[in-house]
Amino acid sequence: MLILVTGATGKVGQHFIAGLLDDPRFSKARIRALCHNRLCPESDRVEVTRGSIADRNVVVAALSEVTHVLHLATCKETPDDVMDVTVKGLFWLLEEFRTSATARQLILIGGDAGIGHFYYRHDGPVTEHAPHRAYPGCYALSKVLEEVTLEQFTIQYGINGCCLRAPWIMEKDDFKYSLSFGDDVFGGPDWKTLVPMADAERYARMGTVPLLRDSDGRPLKRNFVHVDDLVSAILSAIDNPRAKGELFNICMDRPVDYAEVAAYLARTQGLDAVDIPSRYHSNWMDNSKAKYLLNWQPKYDLEMLIDSAWRYERPRNDPRVVWYPG
Image (cartoon, rainbow, N blue to C red):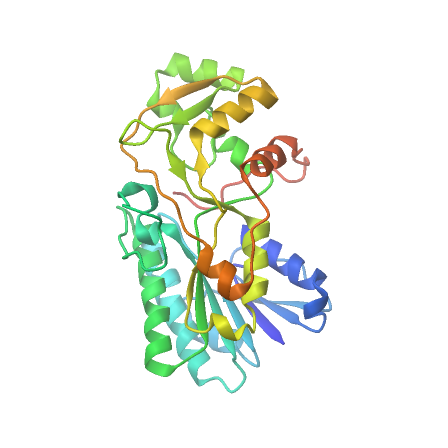
């Protein structure tokens, strides 16, 4: 088994490679990491090939003798690159995959941006049958195009492909900084822009957390997944015959409720919360299909997500770095 991993140096790629190498089920598997700007360390089971996925010749060489592909490479809000990387790159992967004599399975990591996550109202649990509805910006559009392209290749050519659709992926202390009113905020919303500057500075000093409310005034519910749970789902999908041609929601059993977050942090950390109104909509991704077909189960619940983020002590050689805008 030789697995090509695109986006190998990203959050999911690094955790996947480590998880697969430690899993006795895949003791004979080897990794080929396709890297562009950053390189991952090589070993007797990990080799690196360098180049852009937008270059067809690079993709052809990277897929030589490969049996499995895990496609993680993506762009955020970078209009100059997004079509080349996330659309053309996937197309070259699929074109080479479908004619390969060795390729057996391709796994795409999709995102809930393709269904608009909390930008649009959902009348019930968000299943895999939810229509594509990208929110404004090129990133969400690219996630729609990725999922549709893979789906059409499975229809046109019968390839063994599946998509694992993930919401916001957390690791280390990500969740803690996703609630920061300071310049160190991770992701969005950018809380300091939603309150007066003096208040934001005070909240940042005190560790006050936002209690985000949805368009109906209720505490907002938003979907998350810890990277460890996403990696376990990927490992469950590899060579699983029930994954062929399928789309799976990979997320926590319950969405994060900002009121529950505020209450738990008040009880365990003594932190205050402040109401933040919004026009966003609560939603609830349903992961039942992945549980049923992949025999997969997430380990992280809300308390574990919070506790792990607040306990994490970041080493000095591992600074918080955002590698892409958006």
